[in-house]
Length: 66
Image 1 (spheres, rainbow, N blue to C red):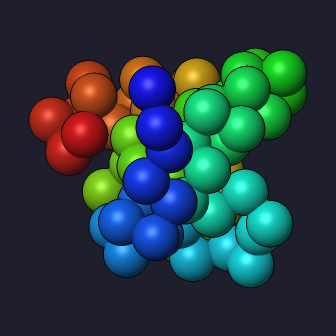
Image 2: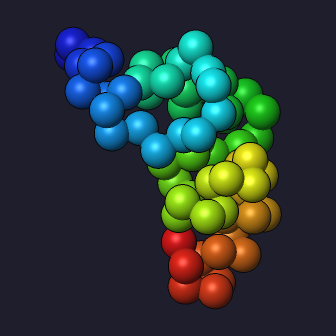
């Protein structure tokens, strides 16, 4: 499978300056190693908090906002 880095970058909602932006497989592996989810799992306002924890995501799901 080819990585479509430029296309991924254009659609990446992450607001953090990161060298993995658009490299989804690297991003997922990085966050998984930290027991987190990548920015693309979160709605824009929640993503801006930089709280990528499973607990934060679960709260958003329970509220119906993710």
